[in-house]
Length: 540
Image (cartoon, rainbow, N blue to C red; front, top):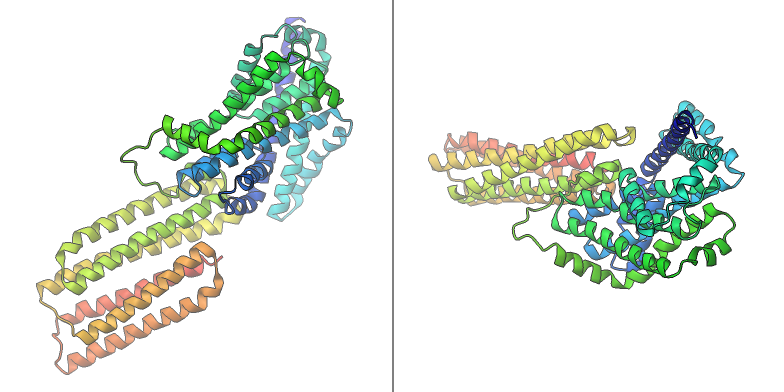
């Protein structure tokens, strides 16, 4: 092969790889956007049943078409405490099974029907250009991605087939198992997808190329790809909490131990490929894809009973930090899915609301008992709420460019809800000022009036409990109860102010108390209004 021919071969090969990766990207991104609701529902069914968690990991990865994405999400869920390490271990095992679907699709390139599948690029692009429905546009992009995968595979196979004699001479001399194993790890770490590397190897097999003698050699690369695929999750977990780092380590341990066992098996049984998959399946492409699936299913069956052992080893290797900061629901890993990110933001909104309401409760207690010592802790809670709200806003800003039209309203509503919650924190701040003024001017309210204010605060607590339930459960049937509670708060305000004016006219109250009293009661009504706004925007 001349230098010119070699450069032409390299350009065509890289072009084929590029088309293939673009297809995988289109397929993965659009399936993930269409399936986020199902994924969210799947992860919501987590339990301590290991087989169920394996199934969740398998189905989620089959939908997303990327074990790296699924594992990163699992690490994120562990990081925020939604699932524990035992559940995550089983899910990671399932994710390894789900990722073999891509290789099975690639193996279809050995069949003549793939020429017709390539037509889906045209159909998909036309759907994306002409359809008005966002879901139909995404479906079109999925079809286009699927077609591009087969076009890329075909381009790679044809390029290698044209130069088969020259290329075969390079690959047949590579027989060292450890070199091939390391090559699989290295290539997958760069591409960040074991499915992509496996699919490229399948394209080589379709072109008639063999690695080494055509026996076990190709399997060593496949084993290496499974370890290389751990890189994304491990890197993702480095900046996370202790349990998230443990989850990343468990992923690495699971794949490394499994690969080591199979590596020993293949070294001890040189004729493994010839005695098994080459007898069972007619084409080399199918043989490679089936081994990839066989390896991950076998490792899962072997290691599933030992999930607790993996968890224990990870805990020994990564000990608990003594003063680890409290984790929130905001995790960068969730930004890959708008649906999951919005769900996490809603949970974080509840945390923010709890902090703001705690500040209000403390400020009200300070006012009621004339205790200045509670003002400083109230201000600390208000500051904490401010920091949390800024974190939410920053997260929303990062999410917005990655979200689609479907989630733009959710993001806008969350921005508004954060503003409403911070108005509650401001009301708590106002109460600290009323406390200071009441102490300075020795203002007193009768026990009857205090009982009425307590009743108003009690209805606000009812309103807040209902609002939290709506945020988390999206139960619009609670809105009539929200309206009833808000009407009661409004009625309390009118009753309290009318009574106060009557007492002033009768000379029963100090004139200087009117400013504090009316502002206090009006702030309570405003607090109820803000909770009602949040409930109505969070209902869907």
